[in-house]
Image (cartoon, rainbow over all chains, first blue to last red; front, side):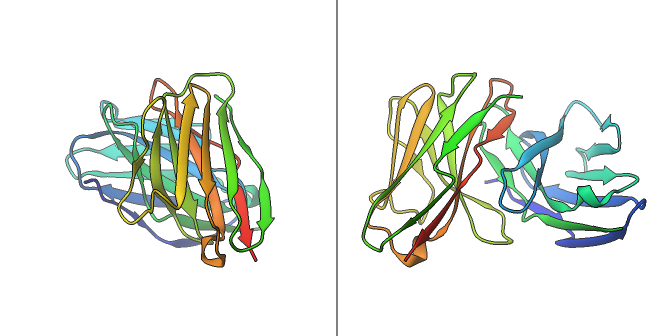
Length: 112
Length: 114
């Protein structure tokens, strides 16, 4: 089955800096890669996603890049703010399966 | 985005009792729903896939008689933790995919078994 590795497990940055979280996947049949933000005790919220026919997608301060050949994708957050502090999960989904395999999560801490 | 409603948000129960958690898709039909368990500071662990009108598919190591899943309609799936014990205490969360594979989560249920 699919295996998604996520790094780092913890990321601490100063407000205004950029943050990058990286994920790798094993199954070349995976073609949909969402990113979720989860605040303590709350539900994961979809913040951005990318499909395998696209190499990069951007939404304001958030961007995701995908390298299909290397089987890795990354989340980039620019101009970080304290409210960006949360746990971020990446996931890989095989076409038609709807079943995501999640990474282990990255705890992002943005210091004011 | 789509809305998935989950109830209750938290529940405290005595050891040996059963607890039912409901998950509803409010503005779309969900033939499939997923149930996850999440321990503090850990990732989402898929427990089972709930299929409308048929039996749920359980992940390896998850006891189907312990965690009963019913998906009787296109908008409702329930998870019942039977004869709960302290080790069952956890954050349980459901999710449902829209037709375009986007996955939306319920608000989660914090279960504490005394």
